[in-house]
Image (cartoon, rainbow, N blue to C red; front, top):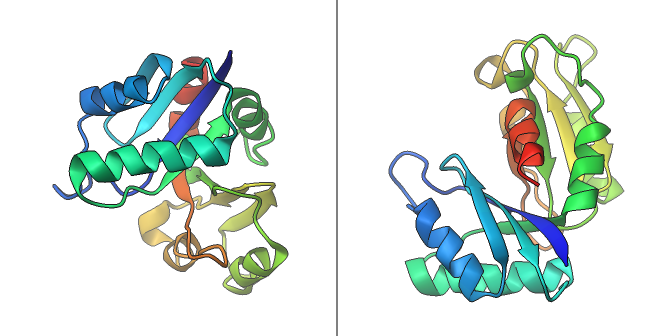
Length: 181
């Protein structure tokens, strides 16, 4: 039985797209997941999948259940626990002063070179911000914070060729999620 991390994008922000975490756990249980644990209200779920489904299949099942329950699309990314933990351990800036300024942006599939090139194109030599890529994770370090970053907004809006976007978590949250695996 494999553990998985489920990351939802764009919920419970500014009073829009409300998804209560208790209901998320119920929907995950209805989809066959067990030992469901959530972390804060931004759509972080850790669970066991007794069926050991492929991430894409489980993503589609959960996204469909969320759409049926709430009446709106909830972009969903499912990452097997070993891949998630390994990605967090490979963070290029693990020892920053403030872990809230490093974000792992998890995409549903590996990030193609075209998307990485578009992200790099936003950067200039004078930018204090940094961006790196690792499989399905885009790492973004904004040493002065997201709100003061010139590149954070356009970079986080980048999408895969099929239109799907990543969902970001700061390094502090990633550590908390990892602790629940």
